[in-house]
Length: 412
Image (cartoon, rainbow, N blue to C red; front, side, top):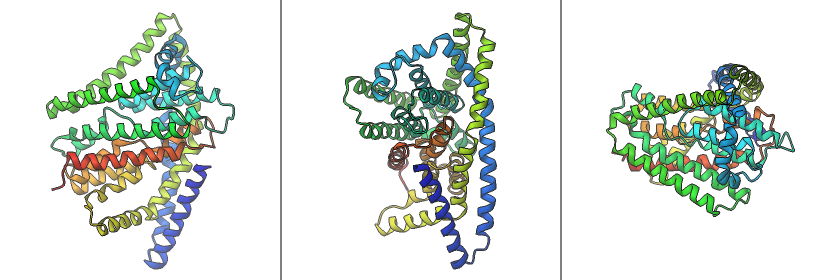
């Protein structure tokens, strides 16, 4: 229902803005831009889905080995003290708990290619517990919100982009991103817990969040103590080493259980192909709506209005130029990335706007993309309170990104 309102709203707003540009600004190219955007967005949605096929096949094949070897059940038992409280609808030792744990871990390490396939596997396992196949369960909503909040410890890609755009210290956004994305995830979990009436003051949850804060604080201290030029190198090395260790660990677990590793891998890889095909219509629908919204000029009108209001209130407007990245982030990952790159090209990578755009890009994930892909893979249409809670988390991440950027990169 919420996706229906969002999709329809984007299309109608784009149409109204386009008409205003046509009649009041005599802009005859606006509808050409919109039509071109619809075809480009549809093509991109198909290409993204097909591009996921290889990665999905690889990781769902490896996940099948992990499942048959008993690794998933081991992860489920390990995660049960905390996940049993956050996901009360999941039976004890159910394999979905272990898969969710692996997905969250992959997201935290910035291993996007591994996180998405594992997350889709988790959704399929959660769907098996779902009594209403077209309606999201509480466990699905919690899982989607943790994913959409985008908790990432090692933002390798953003640091690589900053290096390409000539940043003096590409890793100077590392700590601000870590703080902003942690705050976004915390807001996501708290908002879902409030709606689902989950008691946040249970001992296991207090220990978990306290331990997580200590862990994040330790990482901040460790990377802050490193020479600037070593931060990006160590981040990339740790992530790639862990990824290779995971792959080898799955294979060794299969061999130890005397599985036919090859046949087991092929069985899981076939599921990856079918999953990639299933998400195509959902992804095309949401990307077309976002593309039309951008092409109509509605985003530019929104930014101009905010700039005027902030200036009217007598506040600093330096952050306004980074708002396109912030506003685009929940709508389109590639769109937000494009806005971030444009900000670094226009204002320079080491400018306040360039740095804030990078922090905002790393603070959360793309809400509508995550919802379309994950829910689309299992045919969920009624998303219930998924998107409202995710938008609250995104707002928290955006506010944190702005505040942290002012603290770390004072405006001259």
